[in-house]
Image (cartoon, rainbow, N blue to C red; front, side):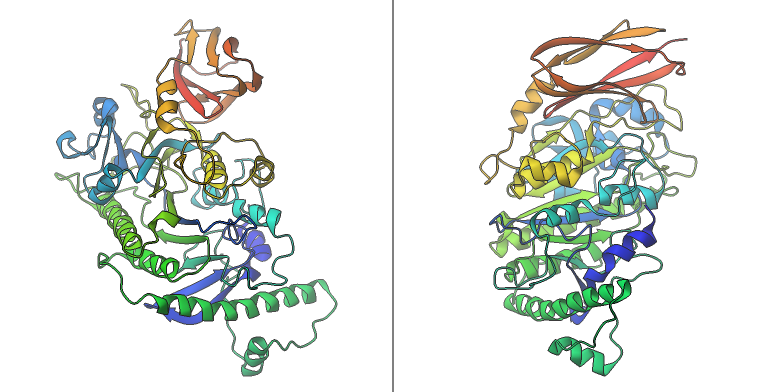
Length: 529
């Protein structure tokens, strides 16, 4: 999407507050397409969602390391591979480990409060930072430009009259809060600022006293009226934010020199202070590691190690603080980045823009485990090869909306504009219904999709097992791009077969991806000369 157009329709809802807490400026959002989300909905819940953006494209293969693919990964990354003896082990897991800098998240996993979702992406991945960020924040497809964010669409379903009548006694607090600022199509852009500078004393006092000069009866005048409404609300929000911050007089220790930890410390303070705000967004940059990703001779250290260490330490401190404040059961957090990195490292000791990458979901109510299999890494990898997608990122959004905020299916379809699978993320004892991750992984361990012949030249028969319900079979090339959809329909329980024809494709590796309800599985196919 065009960032200017996005911000032109979204930005009036965000106004810079003059108040500072711990040196950070607050931005309160009302109808922002990204952040005006799962907030103050009629659904009665005190649940909070914290989004952590890893700006720049995080190297998922260096964060969540596939131990069962280690030899092939080492061959593809001879200059940056981490020694196998240094990789952090996870309780009960033999196929996957964490980067050595992530001891905080290792302990969180071992305590049952972390889930890793493997190979999250979308068909036809885009490798532009700006466009890829647009796609993640709006939940659009690669070829679709949306002028609204996925969370904004959710709020619109439940609060079509917002901002009229807000704040009120039912929802006196901001709908969503970002700590700090960063360049993002959902937050700010080159021509429109989400903050609102008030330079004229008369306008300032009119604003806080609810007095408005008449606005012209034009399109611009209506927009001015809307800006004034939201600005006045934000001044009122300033008082409740300061009150919530003042209600918390003691917090646990956070790491120093860690900007993400500084942001999460404020989030914990506001949550514990009683704000009803349901979505917070924080971010940390620097993940565009094209060069010098590691230190030569000590690949477990370097730029990426420092970044992952900060993320891990900050989340660990945040969860410890929430527990101390008796607020941890209210919070679920998610990390995301606009894309992953290529399988093969480059000659500059870094990695280039890639496709799918793992997501981390954390919180007391999260189902512990690893969802999905280790990404398939062949013995021969080229510079263009990517991690094949296992889960669509919009399935993660749908699952959080459904399981953490109890959103009905009809609303999910309107928000995400399609029917996405519901993944087992939240524990079944939470208020909403969730599949059990262990049962799902046990089913996924069966061979649900095969093809014959393999290798093939002209055609191959794809045989798959269905548990009933909606079934999707997609074929991706080695670059991670969708080239063919073989099945996208309701299927009966049992074994089915579909033919994949060579329509002039280049010889090489292809991936057949089966999605059946919450189940998914990827099959490697070889197209021969």
